[in-house]
Image (cartoon, rainbow, N blue to C red; front, top):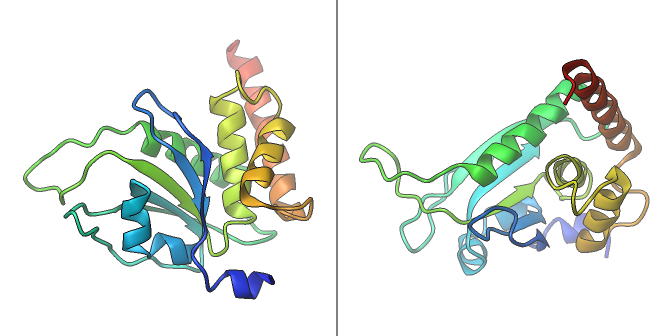
Length: 187
């Protein structure tokens, strides 16, 4: 199946279960899946993170009354991003996964649930961001970035051409930046 054919179908694949203390699952997918309310409800997804600079996602409510929490960190598909922007996306993903879901009168109805990270196709920006997240925040399971990348590729069914070279270079810049920051702070 070509990327163009796949981009017309919903793609929603689990990457890691028990990603937090409450048992959430982290999913990777595409924009089509992120707009499929029935698919998201069946899979317990209540928050999405869109990494595509060129894809705007409309508000979405699930049939149980839950309003999906949407976060958008627009990364370019290919060269043009900076390491700090990608690191920001990784940190925001950590926040989304660990955020509580308080029930306040002025908030849309929401409940804690699983998290979907997507871009247009879920092959490069999403895969790179999730691999970095797994390595940086789950080092006991993914001690090397390459371990996390291999895991994401396997879950998403990607070959070595994805994520794109520009995204992999950016991931390496983040790793160097993170190592320098840890060395400077003694962490």
